Length: 67
Image (cartoon, rainbow, N blue to C red; front, top):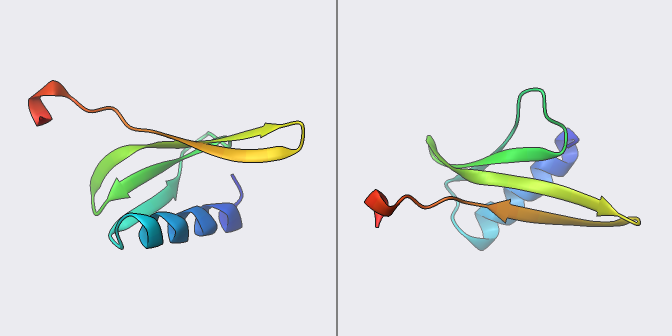
């Protein structure tokens, strides 16, 4: 993802969910970014660019010990 795209996603996550959310670029990956709540890793947001329609998919695993 381009830096300006990550900035837009960062603003969206802050506005929609929590101001402490941070979206960061992933090392050696250009199709996704990592999402954190402060320093805690939450999940990965993937970009899907199919037929010129760009969309995003957020994936977050929840461990049973965290429930």
